[in-house]
Image: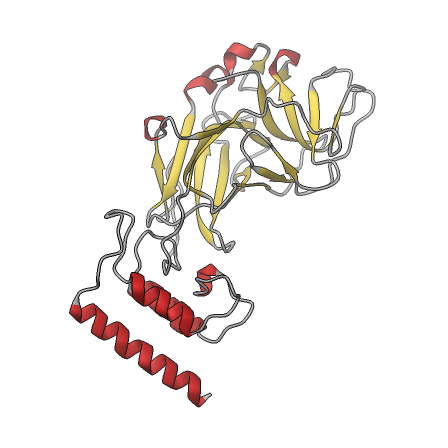
Length: 317
């Protein structure tokens, strides 16, 4: 099956949501905190943007303390000299100004939705780099949003691509976002969530491969709703303990070096009868009802028969 991408549209696995879907408990990362200079530097030698470029993660992954979001750069961040900008991930201060070709120039903080900083993948080459990754704290988020940025030359055709990944690094889907004019940044919010309710643990931000001569993807005011504690037995984190979770546990039964998504619900790195018992105790529970109901007799019987067969198979191995 070939997915047809349309500007602003999501794949079958991601659903677009609006700013109104994010509430008072939403975590907001504005990239305005004072950088931890043990793992960041300021590009004060740059003649075009004096004091306007902060380079986070110059040696390793960088954690923003305001939100707990971790940044992983695709290449080592290198500081520029003279009028040559550095390559890597940059926190840009809007008051320093920044030209975005046909999209306009950032020259005042009022063009940004909140504050005066934004995160950008910067480089002196016209060839875009690999995606940079933002990993969300805890078990991830139920939805993610932001004001997205892309430097390009063809408004309406240049697009930003955001890929979403789950807690076990599994690919969840992608969304394409038309690159907005600078003047429209304040109204360019795009958010998304998964169609099945599974948690988003990280996002990779890049230009879309069908875009011509676009580079410098970025985001201003990243938002996300922190995922609640998973229900014991909910292997796929879709908010329901059911047959799919049992099938996951069955597939990985006996596995060592296992994770939650394999069926290891007690954290001992093994999928065994203890995890089967946890799943059985919570079978039928969901976030929607906020409880762990007693499974219906038919479901309990199926689970019991499957569990017995699973244990019997394990003993025979």
